[in-house]
Figure (cartoon, rainbow, N blue to C red):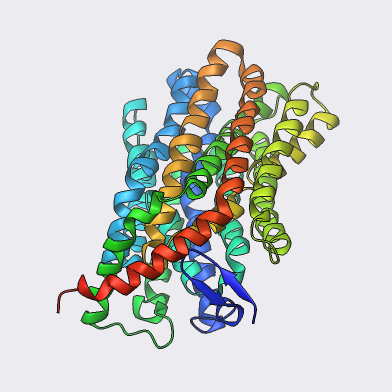
Length: 448
């Protein structure tokens, strides 16, 4: 019999391909969760479409503009872990609905901001609302799909961030040019509130429980006991820490591109805000496609040898470094745009493999918290400093000079992924043994 080795256990291949809930309901939950993730990033990235307008109206520096973008990712990074831990204990669906409502209302607050300080506060609350959505949302999705689809689903779900960025920048730029930047924020806030209502009607915590799994009070006590027993496993191996760090470093590049490409096209291709937003949106779409393809390729090439996940991640990092370095050395024109497209395609291709590796190296009972840890790394190492550091570099070297420096972060990401690859197989075997031991001891930890 063929077996799939994960940190949760060594399970038969038939179990790895089993659907915990009906296929129709699983895909419905995925679609609604993906829709909310679109709203999440539309609310986050609409700001980048109106950078030129805010810069002119409030006389802001590039560093100040970058901080308005980076504060969201910073809040996500700081709060994602405690809020995801709470969601693992008190209900993931309830937490998702609270998050969506908060970021949507905060985005509406940005629409009525009268100063940089008020906008900064509104953006901070957008980040607070978004803090746990990515980690909890992907934990919900992976819990109701077969294990064999993990990298593909992780890449596709995370790609919702890039696709949401496309819509946020493109639609936001068009709305801002037609009706003013305030209406761009208002449109995103309203969209998020409508989706939250639909999600609340369709998705129920009880229906997410796998077939045959008890959901009574005793089961809740067992889950809480498993949660306490498995929390130390979040950092128990070199390979899982490498997945966190490598993913975060690589997303530094993607975060910088998503934030500053509208301004790049505005300044160097002399495009109006709406056209620059549309052009940047096309490249953000390429980043999203790269996330999906990275997950698909990872699942295909690692079906026989799981360690190949690390090779896919490292290959994406190295390829992005080469393509983006070339792009920003070329003069404006078709050659630069082609190299930029290749760099964007590879810049976040490691997202799906990294998420799948985290899922394999951590127990299901702390899935949301494990993905919160990944989100923390993605935010604090990548999405938060990416826009802000690029803005600070742009004030000193110009935006083009800053974008020439940013791809060098991929060197560190590649090294970290290779370190994780070196330790991966031995960590899987060791952690599988720890899981078996923890589960054997569990009855003594749960109150009778």
